[in-house]
Length: 129
Image (cartoon, rainbow, N blue to C red):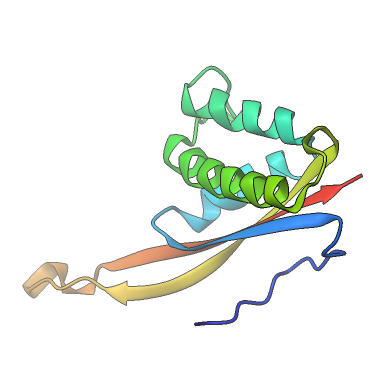
């Protein structure tokens, strides 16, 4: 098993965390969405991500549907981890960060041989106030 180090280390008794590794989303757009979600209450953050997914609300004129879907899955995983720990879900605050993952060359021939697939790592920490 690969040990991953989180960018934000909190008290393990008052926080829950989840890690999305090698997600097929853009790092640039995931940084924008993570900054918008960080510091918000869990309910407000999930509502913002769901509104982006349903194209009801936009950030900088874009909806970021693929990115918000990937981040919403990681937030839901962190929420279930917090529920398992017995934390109060109404008092949780989201701290999300996006980091560039590995890149690999796509198997192509001739002109398309230099295209790369990019990956993103997402870290979500839910801190109880």
